[in-house]
Amino acid sequence: MEIKITSMDHKGNGIGKLDNKVIFVPKSITGDVCDIDIYKSYKKYDIGKINKVIKKSESRKEVLCPYFDICGGCNISNLDYIYQLKFKVDKVKNIFKKYLDLEIDPRVIGSVKEYNYRNKITYHNNNGLGLIGEYGDLVKIDKCLLVSDRVNELYNEIKKNDLSLVKLITIKECDNGLILVIDGKMDVKKIEKYCIGIYMNDKCVYKKEDGYIFVDDIKYMLSDKSFFQINTSNISNLYDEIVRYGSFSKNDRVIDLYCGVGSISLYIAKYVKSVLGIEIIDEAIKDAKMNAKNNGIDNAKFLCGDVAKLIDDNIDGDILIVDPPRVGLDKHTIDVINEKKIKKMIYVSCDPMTLVRDIKLLNNYELTNISVVDMFPQTHHVECVAKLICNDK
Ligand SMILES: C[S@@+](CC[C@H](N)C(=O)[O-])C[C@H]1O[C@@H](n2cnc3c(N)ncnc32)[C@H](O)[C@@H]1O
Image (cartoon, rainbow, N blue to C red; front, top):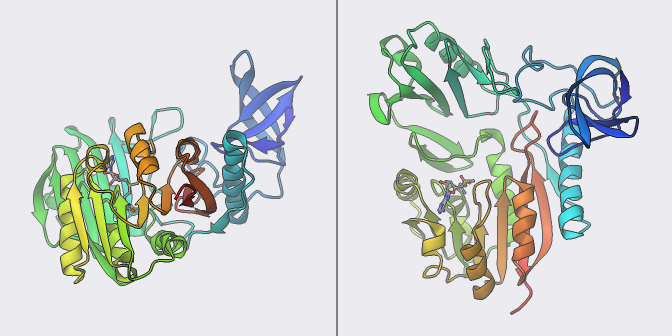
């Protein structure tokens, strides 16, 4: 069946119509004309599978990855990069219009690197190592274009070993080398030379040196468990948006909720009077304190615990930064933020759906600016930085 793709959904699937029924066609893009088969049929819509792209959209580019058709990871890597950015901005605009009835005009900041940007990748083992594909099955790959050559090299060396007792393997790339995190058991003797550290079932079994990543002039030490932004090349662009929206001064006392290893706190510390970071993972807080000390920063303090529990007693400041996980803010945290009426708030979000939900609930605040910073090229994922001002002072 021939179908013209006229738009794309939030997950990057092409959308067209046949006999007035909506068809979602994964891996197609606006402007394509495709020959498809119906893969799944529902009452209100169908899902199609491409047999052939009959006419290519002008936004198309050559797909570099041989696993594109079976691996769900880089699902918009058939879009030219400039159109990937347009897709992301349109997606955020549509979500704000639909759920908040707001017309927005986001600033857009592309990624420094379009490939080889990921500093972390997790492989699954099921009679061989690979990535989980879009249909939930294991895709056995030789290389992934989102990570560096040295990560691909280590991955291929790991595959030569007996992996029968291994569940998951994560490789983290630091500036000074690779950290391997193994869930399961294996002999690591032959792969030690490729790593600066190896952790097996949460225990360090090999250490040459600690891993670190520089973002501008700040050196961040990373432990095996702590969260760190995935796209090393674009972290300073993301944090510079926070600095821009913060318009910080030396009198400002800043609160940084969901602070991870203190990445944002330490980046902005030089512009402000003080920063207080709060984070639930103990190791991350240990890293944050060590990172403050190693970088000679003495105006950043960190607390370990659940934001929802610590917020009542620790929300005394001039500017609030929140960078929650995908699920967004919890109800109690939103209530306290509304009540405390801190004059300026910067919300860093990796999910625009929970961002709009929370903005709607933050009824003492008004959105004044928003940026889309591309931390995930080749994928439909979006990172936003939003500035909100308290409208009830
Ligand atoms: C998106 S990351 C942001 C980290 C940091 N701001 C950065 O840029 O690297 C979210 C962080 O929130 C932490 N987190 C998740 N739930 C939390 C909670 N209830 N209370 C405190 N921290 C939490 C996670 O461990 C993670 O480090």
